[in-house]
Image (cartoon, rainbow, N blue to C red; front, top):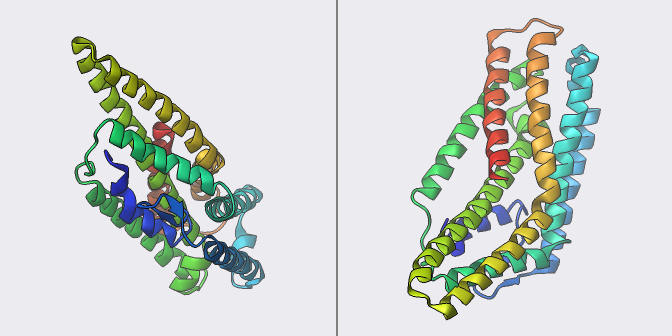
Amino acid sequence: MTDIFCIKPFFYYLNAFLITPWYDFKRDVIVKPNLCKLYATVLISLKLSSLVYLMLDERTSPTYEKLVLAHKILFSFYFSTTITLTILTIVKSSFWNTDSWITMLTTLHHVDLMVRNKEHSSKNFYLKLFVKHAALILCFGYQIFVWSSLIESSIWEMIFLGGIWEAYFEFLSVQLMLVIICSFQNRYAKINELVFILKKVRFVQDLKTLARSYRLLGETVDVFNKIFGWPLVFIIFHCGLQMVYCVNFTVLVTYEMNHQNLMANISILLWVTVSGFGVSAGA
């Protein structure tokens, strides 16, 4: 991603989930902050209500009781981690850190102007994003099919009450982090290239401009850590937790494991492994 404006369609899509604040790229301001806070309150209330409904649902009790103690502990950690990540991300995009978002995006655009980045994206960015979405839908679709049959639940209940919604929320958060991290890498590469060229011709003023760009990017990385620090910790912890849960569930399950359960766990294990390594490598 060589120009920060190219993430606008993706950024606006994330606005619907409040993974990102309602930011106006043209004016560099947060728009309708009070409405955004009201929307965040509604989303958090719905999430907490679905959690209470899940805890009181009698259909999930028999399945939960069949789990061994290790599975129950991992299951509790899984839901507490994903729900905390979801609520924390929504809060940070609506109530807290909105100034940090403005600083980060404005600075990246300013650096683009300083190094003369043109408004275009990296090749096939949205195609790659679409392919990732397709793979995720296939993986979670199979999960929904298997577990909805196992606990006799509807597909919609599995999506909104079975952790699928939180998993998709986490996926979008990871993709946003990777996009911004790649933006940092591309800008540093661009500045290094310009420095190498200008050192030969000794344009002192241009070198000073590039030095200022270095400083601004360094400050922006600090802002990125401030925004995504704790969410990143939760995501990496959750990826490791999910891997342990899938392996333990496959090995220590207390009732008959058919091939569908096995394939469902293998599919989610592979997806979490790829996602976990992706965000860890990007960080």
